[in-house]
Length: 86
Image (cartoon, rainbow, N blue to C red; front, side):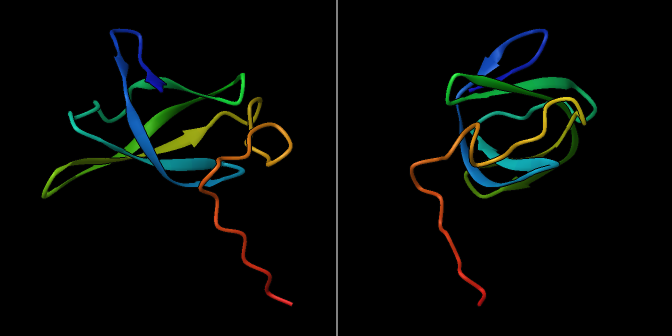
């Protein structure tokens, strides 16, 4: 769930890292908008820094606040692909 001051969007989480995430939405999210992504009982605050249109909707890149970085200990998406680089 992605929440702005004006509304809530159901989104698919495409990528996530400590400082941000990319979500896929059916509707356009305003670039520059402050947002909160909810997951695992936690909220990750930030703002939309980039929006791009694709064939079936919109990708939105979120930059998280330094006060609410993501970590797998706080929220581990069920579909997270773990890659061992060793």
